[in-house]
Image 1 (cartoon, one colour):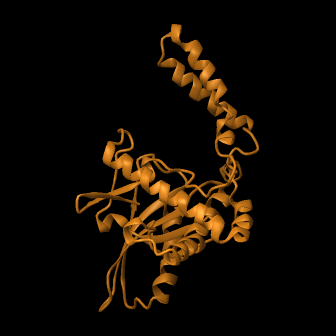
Image 2 (image 1 turned 90 degrees about the vertical axis):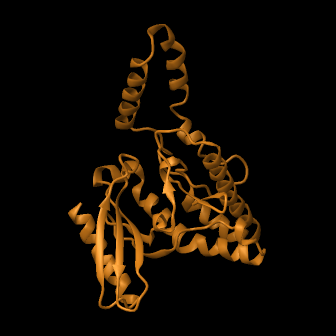
Image 3 (image 1 turned 180 degrees about the horizontal axis):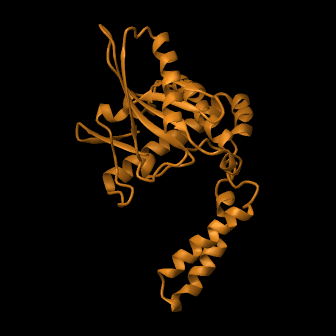
Length: 261
């Protein structure tokens, strides 16, 4: 944790110096996701400086150990995140501007303030959406209709922009998808991952009466290779989120409509 905070402070000094936040007071607070996140250490940052607008920031610092980095394709994971914030956002905004998409139908990204690509200390600093009224949804509860419908609508916008990207910039899109191809478990499961899968199956069976275990074992055995199967494109490749789940969603109600990011 201390190393992660030091990495963040170094990057913040660079970001804030470039924005001329001098003198300044910077308050950094580590936060927990209660098990929902395991690839980064999370922080909220408040910055104040005389005659300048206060900054309410959110930061993620990589925390995947060297042993797990190769198993998780962590280099690819973090570089993909940087690509979204530094390049893809601009491409999508250009398309929306060109097509005169109304503001209420545009995909909204959080503002990026800066990043570090240093291996082992990959960091992104962005606006803290919680300060704008967004809230997370309890990941251990089922989504209700307003949250579920807003989530699907927003995901549809993201996929639609990918199709538009293909149409407007086909050559650039074809070059990019080579690096964006899903890589986690793409080479099959190694022995350690197979052992983890075995334990998951055993834990699931422990909660089921013996008479019903047979069909469950068959389902679990049949789906162990689905990670690769269902992350491969069927027809036209599409840029997808890759980890679209409750833990990564924030919601805000505004003028009787639920907004989502």
